[in-house]
Length: 631
Ligand code: 7RM
Image 1: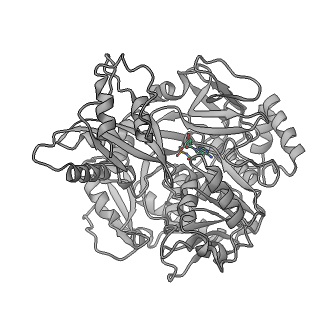
Image 2: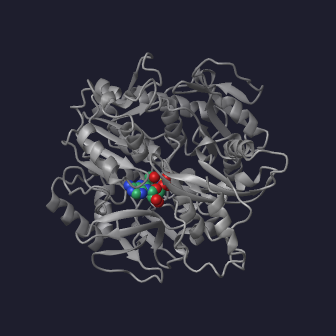
Image 3: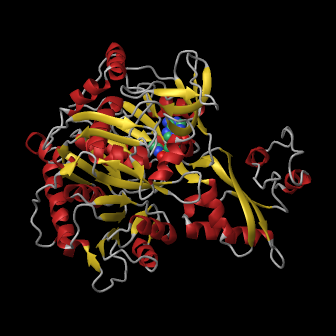
């Protein structure tokens, strides 16, 4: 156990220490881990370059802290409980001892294919235990994993493979998702027609459906592990060696590879997991995210397993076979901590309370949310009907780039407030800056959320392009890490996240760049230009509204819209399909050619006046035309 906060006074005390003496604070936590060699310096940093190093000179392997560390004390305890897509299929339990052997076996299998320290491995897999085993096996041998959400298209997958020059891809024959079967191996095959770096593909047999296996390239998972020893010496890693790359969207068209390193990520994910969720030995913890997102990395796999917890992995979707699936799983596995996204809560709320009836949810102690702001109504529904008024809700604000939870209640210890992420965890120093970069001190202020001191799990760079990292996060407000989020600190000093202040939209907790979606739309041969904005959506939080200038001669607008949606699904994936497409005669642009998204956002929201001064537009009349054409 690292440091566990048990009282409000304890939180205040630890928080103050973490600000006054960060080095002592973090070394006391880091000392509870297994290091092959201790660090010489706790932190060395400068936010101008930026350059951030934690536990400088320390040597470790994160999997020794998951596997060997727990083998003798927790060997027979469940590490992973796996609930398959179909409730009729048997659930699986993998103990810490079994996990130790399966990770080592697969580590040896990858080594036998010539994979070693520093090589990049793409994981494009269903939510099966093998996905977690694959991540840990990479970490075991020092290979750098990059998990790609299996809902992304072949083009998106190929871009990521090419960006990191992966040598190996891990996938499955097909994925089960609710009533659907998704041919993921076929997607990999298509992606690989555009990639030259990949030498081998290891394929898990999940459904037994038909697949093409290419000679000398594709190997079945079961053949790859056959005869491999189930022990494997862990590679010694420097604290600052890369652990993984995870691609995430920003305000430009191209997703960036956020880089996390071994030592700091290990220390922070365990620390934050144990404290925020107040996990106790023997509890069953369940996070419903996919391992393709940062939440799956930090709070399904690394944080819980480092803590010796039992983490539940669910392969399916919340609404299949019916909208009671989550509650059936809570009941069946006696889940104690449940962590999900506001969009899932709103979607289930729409089914009413019937799916909750007859489900025993009395095991629940803590509820959590992540990914987007939660509205008060959904917060109360979650609190009253899922938590039966007994369970604190931890509204956890953080990002792919922060690696772990930054602002959040500590369950049952610090206060909660509907729709508020509340207070920073110890070690985290948030500040609010106005647009000129001045720190807004005191309470009842609102502005740009920045962090002024490094924390162990922060991103180190964006893969292959450090300048982009500097530009995106450290240039707008020199000397600070800029999150891209707007925030308010209320009269009590609690933080409420207001949403993105940049060109990033958040659809069902999935981050997307407006430019990224525009680029995909523009691939349609009839499209001349497009502009994408987010608009408030009841269930998804934000929906995607696309204004498109297109050549419609000889076509109906409806079938053109469907084709544009298909194009986007093809280039990014179904999650990026616009909810609304409006064919427009022009876009509101300034004389310098900049699209006035502010106006487009208002129109998408249904506002028809109060646009401010539009006389500076190249063609002010276009605004009226767009309003008139709105369906
Ligand atoms: C963990 C994750 C990050 C963006 C972030 C915010 C938004 C996340 C909350 C939230 C309000 C929250 N990583 N966000 N958590 N907004 N309250 N509790 O989601 O990289 O995919 O997204 O998500 O805008 O910048 S992410």
